[in-house]
Length: 293
Image (spheres, rainbow, N blue to C red):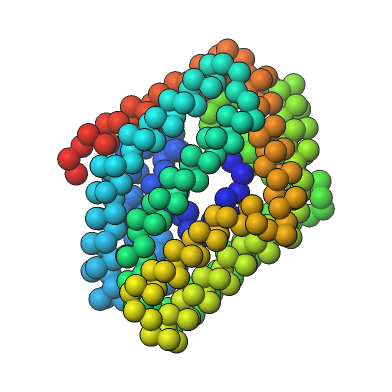
């Protein structure tokens, strides 16, 4: 999926959908423990104090109750649309529509959490802001280590392998001939990890600036929510209003072409594998939505 350029923010949704990357057999387990996973993630970034831990856990529980009740059946419908597309001949427009739907759902979740995010930001202490800055720096170092190691060919190969992990999750194993075609389509995507790193650092800088402004000016909850709302909106809209729009558009188009290539060369057995996996997720989402928890 193309980079939404809100990696730090959309972790909320990624936690909820964590098990999708591990297979449908663990989706229910991961979602039912998603509140704990999200709490651990937040704690790793800011080192919550004893007072924060109590109400942050409560806020996360409330968010998950809302999400289970209102969003999971919609996720199942998104997957049903993908099933229909896979059974036919999907187009670039189909993929962009799917991407926009996921982006919209992510944005909705973040806007729903605005009051809770504002409470957390207003409660942060100077040492916690320093912890957040150090975590960002560590994440950037990890990005450089993984994505920017070696020459251009090494970086292309690493990106290809990451893509193949996702394609194999959906479709199962590919033949050497199929892998060669996928590698060609993968390498056709523009590669500039300096841009991706700079975008990460831009987002991090904006988050830190927001947190510091709230603390420095002692902003109230409403003003803090307004700042966070603007940050989320601007982050999601950066693809369309960036000086790098040409690069982003080229990357999105070539990524869509990569996915279409995989679908085109997939055998009936591989497509059946993907259909079965999606059906497992659909069943799990509907079952989770029906649970009273």
